[in-house]
Image 1 (tube, rainbow, N blue to C red):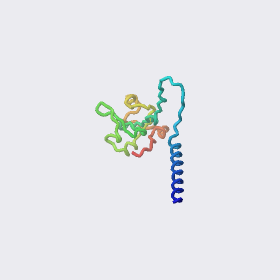
Image 2: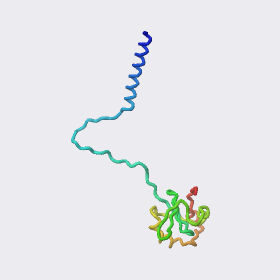
Image 3: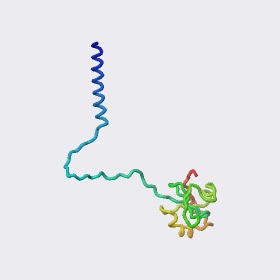
Length: 142
């Protein structure tokens, strides 16, 4: 019978110590007692995530832009701009094998298309000296 009382006391002591430890570890909330002006000031909002700038490559032969950050192809169609995961009327392999130019803007191609089309017409080819700089090297798995 003494063994049972000793066992119970040991288990009770272990239980109490475990509960105190658990409460200490999980209940560690700081408390500061400051002036009580009756005004609550919310902590500053923290935005989680990050912004990714669009980066476009233009394919003059097809009038198509590709954004590697969005993994989308953008082009005008029927008087409006569309953005799709695949280009229109051409396979990805054929498109990527055609001449391409990295664009210097980071917003919608719609805002720059008139200037881009004028500078890089459908029959545009990269010059020999600039070919490596201007050809698309985005290496996407599309």
